[in-house]
Length: 327
Image 1: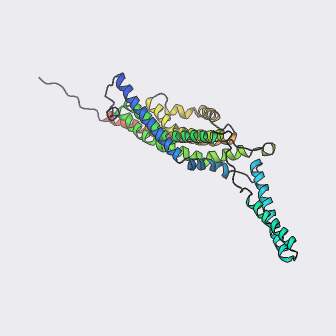
Image 2: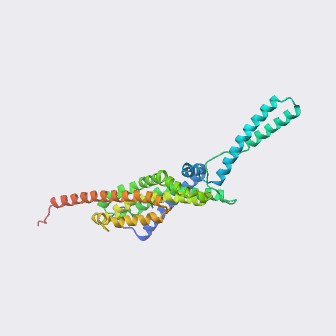
Image 3: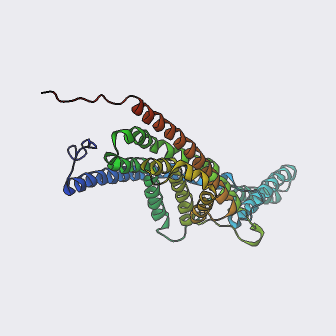
């Protein structure tokens, strides 16, 4: 492993076998990172599930027609009524002189206390599982998705590190900082998605037209929606890296990107439509950071163009001295 992940320079010429060996080593690193992150998430699965359930519980309206919660609220009202009735029975038993009536009233009070204690507590709604094995399978799937989410920064880093030797020394001056920014951009996208996009998407979707539906949230589609949305937000925050790469390589120029903003907006809208959550709220929340990142990438690419132009002008102003061979 140590020999296959050696530093490869731009001037090095590797054979196909050596390239495949390096690729295999990086794939093994990615798999080990994914398995390790999945194992950690499975170990801390309760905390992971609480984190994923928080957007659902924090965006719930008090008037939501959740049949399970409605039944629990009814049980709590019934428990409050029985507590008050038990207190009244005890007061009546203390005032009566008839032994049989006293015994009956105390028995009713005790039964009321037991009934009130058996009422389920009101809690925020949580995803519903169906079937015997689904709790275990959903925990395992959530741990795998969360492990992929945690290991993606390293996976993206390994991907960029594999193609980095193809850049020239001058291109590496731009590519290397961009590669180091990949994990930070991904984490920023995930954090932005969790605190901004996911709560508003769930609030809109789960509280829409609740008078016509019994609102029950199934675990499998809910966790897949949240985790896929977070992974998508992390990948979308890689837009600056992609734009800088295609402008530095010369596929497109910065001026071409700036003059074709309308096509970029159309492409951003199409990408947002294809990602999880096709409601207008989620699409708008994803389109806004994508467009901001697009404009920021154009600005940064323009600054790099100016830097390259200044470097080229300096090279022209100070040409290397010509040496002649003397006999």
